[in-house]
Image 1 (cartoon, rainbow, N blue to C red):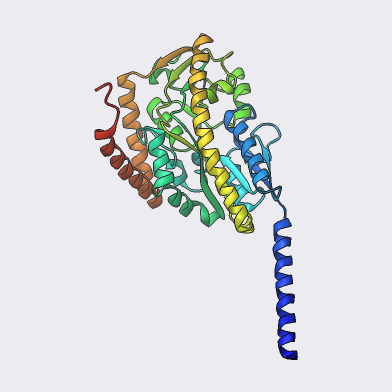
Image 2: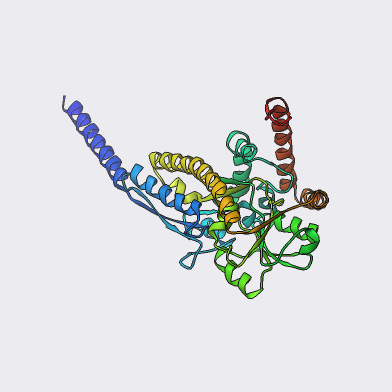
Length: 356
């Protein structure tokens, strides 16, 4: 009987120890930093504030994410966000895949480049339903980074300028702010412009000083929120270089692994909620922003059929270069093209019929 009592005592002690460990785990608090590319007035940054607050509430204060904008208080900016997440300087980053092209050339083809996915739903299906996210993680994980799609701006706005731009020929020799990677390469090849990947906080001063002649910055609402309409009275639209742009989250793998399973689930759920709400709310704001540009008297020009043909030739050459120079890039481009063909084949029968 004494042996049985001894075993029961040991079992009780083990259960108490396990319960204590579980309670300690429940009480453990994780403090993360999230560096965004966005300026504070941008809709995606406003939605990020809601995202971090949702995580705090759902986790009962066990996962607290401090958010930093891409403005003067930024911890890191632009392409350095990836390195900071990789090294664990920050636990999360938010930006654009093409900004990480210095890490690997395939990041440049992650976004929907010219004549790639033409609708944001095609890109969403590829990354959320097909193999896009897995391919992106195959690229990010060797650097200790987990990748998640953040939100879809869809078709970008175009170029804002102080003097009129009517065609590609007007851009020859001009200095144009545009993100790095494939978009800037296609712009330079098609127009003969100089592509300069300026970060948001530096755009307005550069445009005022003449260091920039034209500016690309995300979608219609993003361009409006940047506040250049007082000095840029002209625009040429749309942004041929990125018809269905995608923003992303970067997560430090070690920091993520250290989270208890319930906090991982809370984080993943909050990310998915952010994806949906930011994609929808931003597109609604794009509708509003277009009306604002028109009401402000901004002159809007569009590309001619001749220019579109030039864009296509230039983009084909740039895609060819990426496919020849890197195996992962070639595989990623080809997989996207296969999915695009499947998408288009379906919508030949089930697409819009009201304008046929």
